Amino acid sequence: MSDSWSATVLTLFPEMFPGPLGLSLAGRALEAGTWSLEAVDIRSFATDRHRSVDDTPAGGGPGMVMRADVVAAAVDAVHPSGDPRPLIYLSPRGAPLTQQRVRELAAGPGVALLCGRFEGLDQRVIEARQMEEISLGDFVLSGGEPAALALLDAVVRLLPGVMGKEASGEDESFESGLLEYPHYTRPQLFEGREIPAVLTSGDHAKVKAWRRERAEETTRQRRPDLWEKFLRKRP
Image (cartoon, rainbow, N blue to C red):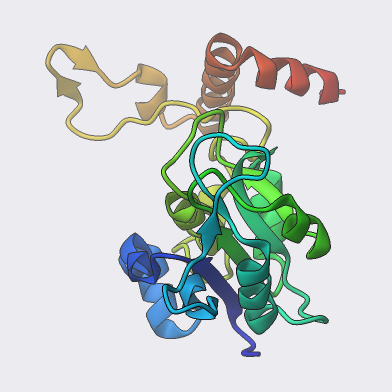
């Protein structure tokens, strides 16, 4: 395995990658070799002439379910025993992705991601391969590919050297347990609205205090769940 941070994505639609990850910060880092990306077609591990990857759900019901044997063969080919990378299944029933988990993944050797489709994946392969289930939020996508793209974008930007300034991520939403403060730039006057005077005062202490107050106010108003968690952790 390469020394760079390594991502492998198991998907029925490998042509969706790198997609937006081939552009901007992630794309430049990919081209520079800071990280690597391999998209593997799950369907290539099907054994019948129709290349079937799904079947009807046991017990009846709508839709189809991804087969345990086909997915297991794909997983074992790219994530053999001893691979230190976490094996993650993107699923709406997974644990919510957090900035803390993103930081942990960025500090590791890489990740192997499984993108579900249809009604989901046979539970037996999830258990047998000890997959970590992660969700982007309380909504359902057509498949795990958009979630995989989002997760990788969040992680790659934290890899050393990817962002221009190492400190540029320190004040972002969730890093301190709060949502981020509002931002302003030129022009000084826009449609009758001025930049808050404190931000052009040159007093760095007052600017810092103002930003902290706005971050706390925004978090309290928009995310009471985060605000309560912040209050519990505050000394």
